[in-house]
Image 1 (tube, rainbow, N blue to C red):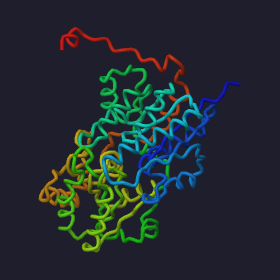
Image 2: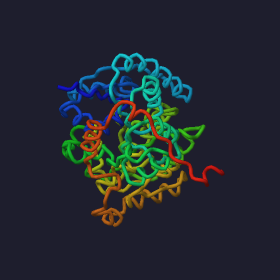
Image 3: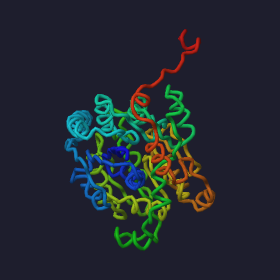
Image 4: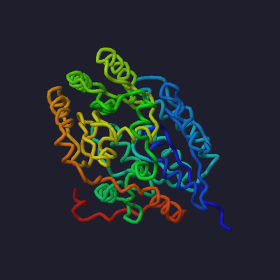
Amino acid sequence: MPEPRVIAVVTTSRADYGHLYWPMRVLAERPGIELRIVAMGSHLSPEFGTTIDEIRKDGFRLDAAIECLLSSDSDVGMAKTIGLATLGLADALGAMRPDLLLLIADRYEMLAPASVALALRIPIAHIEGGEVSMGAVDDAVRNALTKMSHVHFTSTETARQRVIAMGEEPWRVHRAGAPSLDQVRRSRLLTRAELQTALGVDLGQPTAIVAYHPVTIARDTLRETEAFFTALAAGRRQLLFCYPNADAGSRRLIERTRAFLAEYANGEIFCNLSPVTYWGLLAQADALLGNSSSGIMEAATFGLPVVNVGMRQQGRERAQNILDASAQTEDIAQKIEQAFDPGFRRSLAGMQNPYGDGRAAERITEVLATVPLGEALLIKQPVPLSSGWAQV
């Protein structure tokens, strides 16, 4: 009987864990695959909810836990976190030696496992390459991960074509869809009554989820924040804030949110919401406000109006539920009013989500279980240069 194929998955935060849950679950159930899980970054941080406990509660066995997140609020702290993660992962992956390493998306700390895997000759499979988010360092990270990876799972056909245009051989690039949508299709989301009990909120009143993060491409990562909060203050709807990611400026943003809520008096801030809670809120809320990729990728499945603020998500593919607002108070406030217009919500009935059908985990697992290993996977063939390219 052949040895099982060892596939390691790295998760760094509550956000990517919600995306990776079903790929990990399906991989764990697949005969001939031995799943290894590495948790790191904000998963281990009490400040961000110690979400490593959620992984254990879901029945997954953790094979390594890497302490690396600095308690800082700066870009220097982000850079040092990458270094600490690299040191810890060198030991963990050096001992583990998986046949494949599965990474997702574009968080800066994902540069660490990719770099370690490259040195250890471990093939990398990458989810959600080929997308664009020009207002964050995530964009460069995503492209770097694409070029360091050997198998690619894109969310859309446009993203697939973009990865191929970057010089990746077509046989390596698979359109799987966004695995976060598997949560919507396969998980039982919390009902309105369950959400109200669990969160202590009244969803019978007009309610918006607020998911807003620092703009990491800017030197001042909170430069768009005041316009956003000023626009929020103009309304009197219930606002349910989610903690930002662990980026430079996130702690100042949390403090600003708490100060806002002390005066606004009709809202809450939540440090950590489980995937079924968060997706359940997307199904029950009236709008999502901010600059989160969840507004772009997942909200369309629920036909949920989204006000996407500023530059962070510039370049991403969009469905018709997205109302883009510049980082100006008047524009943001106008788009918020449009999002709460019942006519706009009705216009979204039956819309299709361009990011997939909720079956990404099955497609990802099938490829990872069967793709040839060894040098055939590690050695990429260069793209032939046309005469036009050669003259540039």
